[in-house]
Structures are given as C-alpha cells and as structure tokens.
Length: 408
Image (cartoon, rainbow, N blue to C red; front, side, top):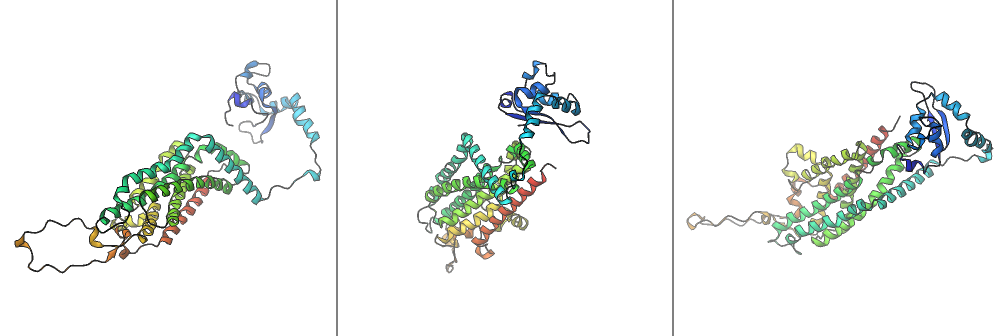
C-alpha cells in the first residue's frame, strides 16, 4: 500500500520500517518492527512519542522517520519494549535446526502456483467490478444484433444471379465487421489490464513474480472471456445473416482476431504509464485495421506500397480467410453479374446490323471481388498461420517491454 488511509492502516497487524540516511553508502537499517496502529505512529511520529499528533494519519511514520538520523532511530528502537518483544524474544524462539529448513519451491511448481493465484485474483476483480464486466459481456450480442439488422435484408437464403451483385458485398461486409468486432473486443478487454496495476506489479516483481506466470494469467482469463464473446458474436451473425461457411473454421478466425486484439491491448497497456494514455492509443491500432482490411478498398486496387503495408494488418488476414471459407459454400456466378446495370438501349439507327456474339465470362466466387484468384490468393491455412504468428510476436514484445521496465 503506497499511501494507505488511516482506516486501511488500522487493518494492518505489524509494520516493518527501514531507514537510510540521504547520500549514505550504508544499507537501510531496521528502525521499527511491531504493531502498526497506533504504536508505529506513536513511536515514529514527527512530533515525538509524547504527542497525541499520531492520530493524524499513517504519513506521520515516514515524516517522523526522516526527522532524525537513522542511527538515533536504531538506538531508540533497540531500547524500546517493542524491540524486546518483537525482535529479541522472537529470535530466541526461532528453531535453527537443519530439520526445520525446507527446500524452496521448484521453478515449475512455483510458476504454476503463481499462475493460479494471479488467475484467481483477476477473476475476483472481474466479479467485483460487475458494471465494467457486464459492459464487456454485453458488447458481443449488441454488436452482433446491429450487424444483423443492417445486412440481413441484403442477404437472401439462396443467392441467385439477380441478387448476387447486392448480396456479395453484403456478405463481405458482414464477415469483415465480425472479425473487426472480435479484434475490438480483445483490445478493449485488455488495454487497462497492466497499466492499471503498475504499482502492484512492480512490488511483486521485486520479490519473486515470474513474468511468464503473470502473462499466462492475463491470457487465460482474458482469452476465455474472448471465447465467450466470439461464440455469442458468431452465433448471432451466422444465423441472422444466413452464412453458409463451415462454422468451426469461421469461429477459429474470429477467435484469432480477438486474441490478436487482446495481445495488442496488452502491449499498449505495457507501453503506457497511465490508463488514459493506453485508451487513447487504441484508435492507432483499430483504425489502420479498418483502412487496410480490404473492404473499404480491395487489396489489389491499392498502390504497391500499401499492398505491402496491408500485410501487417491482422484484419486483412482474418477477412481473407473468412471470405474464402464462405465462398466455398456459396454458388459461383458469372463476372457480368457484378457489373452495374446496362446503359439504355441505343436508338434503332445507331444499333449495329449484326449483334455481337454473346461472351460468356468465367464463373467467379464472392472472394474474387476482394481477393481475385487470378492475382494469387493466400490459402486459408496461411491466413490462420499469419494471425497465429502475429499473436506470438506480440506476446514476445509484451514480455520484452515488461522486462525493460523492471526496477533495477
């Protein structure tokens, strides 16, 4: 506790106070160990032990400790009844036989125990902050319902030549928004997770907190929350927008998108010094995902530098994989079906004497509108692999940032 209130300070049992003189090369010395309230404030109070000013608050402990040299406090403490009871007498009762010594926990067991403790703590925090947790849980059904209400009428149960020009872009928009929503869920779930507990994290790291256990607890709890959100999101969108793609592969891409957003959120949280800074950086992640995702402007229509830049957008890989999965279950249509309505018929005197032969174009699928097969597509497995690789790279980056911010 950095600056405990008097009410919180009174809940403490014992208190250890170490003091070190300014510009002194000597290590800190024990100047008090004993009951926290009111004895510690009375003993170290800035006004002296005879004053009743110790009732003001626990800050008098540090203020009083700084009022005299460390050596004087050490001598005063060693001559006090508190030292006799809590230091000298206890030292006599401590067994020093070898049979009393125990081996330290093994690294693997210690890591698992820390992971389990941290996981329980994070779950407890989620349940205590019910208002925020309910907002996170309700995001998925609300966003999914909004997608369905906007696009359901444009996607018939069975797409025909006549409905294909309107249904194909609507299908693409539904798939892209589903992946983007999942990415947003993951990012919003995690962006406050590290920066909101910097003080606790630093103190625990100075003792024996393992970085892998800490990160594993974050990914366990937030990852399971993302699983729930993605199940609800895809279940509503899949049935409401009449998707036909294989459910589990589509769910895999939605979940990878959420985990990618979660990793981005944790990285932003690790890089930020305050919660406000972390939240303000979220648009720097989400907006490029929208612009470079491939729906606002298909990838093959971008300039070559931007095509290369789009390779770094996770939304592009999720969209490319999902639209190929959906295209496999949708009928193929002629290229002319996507063209705008023909111009009005020419006057009789301007029509050719012999009408041109009808050209039958090659059939194309829905994905061709955004990822033409003639230009070469990445396979579904490649898209999933790239998303997984991005997540692993971000996990490594988070670990490096946290390690670099450890107190030396």
